Image (cartoon, rainbow, N blue to C red; front, top):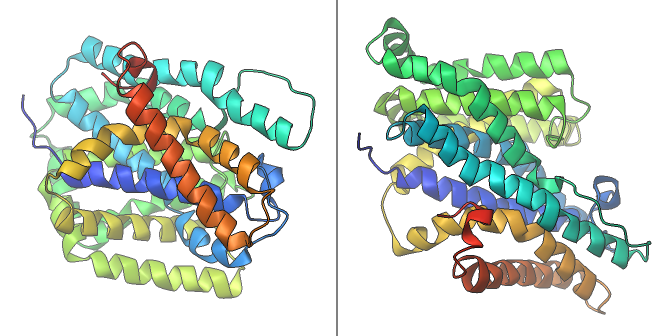
Amino acid sequence: MTTERRHDIDWLRVVAIGLLLIYHIAIVFQPWAMFVGFIRSDESIGALWTPMSLLNVWRIPLLFYVSGMGLYFAMQKRNLAQLLGERTRRILIPFIFGIVAIAPLHFLIFQKYYRMPLSYYPHAGHLWFLGNIFLYVLLLTPLFQYLQRKQDGKFKRGLLALMKNPLGPLSITVFFVLEAVIVKPQLFTLYAQTWHGFLLGLLAFFFGYLFVFSGPTFWQTVAKWKWLYIGAATILFTTRMLIFETNAPGYLMAIESNCWIFGVFGLGYQYLNKPSKSLSYLSPAAYPVYIIHMFALYAGSLIILPLPMPPMMKFAVISLFTFAICYLIYEFIIRRIRFIRPLFGLK
């Protein structure tokens, strides 16, 4: 079976990874950076955290949605054995390799920066995301296969009818609200290696699949009503900043998160669903860059933070350093050495 290439979904994955890098660089300049295992600058930049607070409620859920969508497309041209083999090669092998050889590197740099005794131990670090995705594939693929066999069933017809209404996509937010109310995360945006992050990711992965499964109706709706979703998200974000000092109750942050995401999906579908040479290069690069970016960031922090320059200049230089090192490692090592490519999820 052939499927239409969705360039907007590829672009959103690329953009989300780029924003993730900037977000992690900004953490270096927050006073609490060491509490989440980051090297901390002696000079904080509080102003950075306002835009980062806007990003942090939807950047990771967006990636889970997109991953669920990716599974839908993968299932269209593979049987179960082929699908699990492909997901093992693309997700599990890079996850295991990353635990052994990539994630510990930035912990070693952290220890060197703070003159701690150097000690190596395998650790998932930022690669927790890959472990979650692989588990979601194992848990949800049987259900998705059942839905594939019921393409003309009542469930899909009901889904199509629901997605024609602008409130249809938003209706699934009730599940995210229930997750926040039941789990009661101390911080809604603390996704890594928490039950909250696992369950929220599971929901986003599941509904990401369903949105593509439902056909073009969902995309036409979010494209038509994108400014409604973005307007609602802006009101919720402003309320969060003015009243709750960035950390609103979980149920409100769940609603805000999905409003941003549906607005982003609408913008992407309208403006980004077209091929380009840039996308052809960036789309396969995004995954390896995600895997290696923490090493590049910590190396940049080690070199640049001690230098005598204003903190905003340090932020800019570390950003340039991180993106440049990621590019060089991807372009001249990962992309070109054949036996290395599978370790970073490439063919």
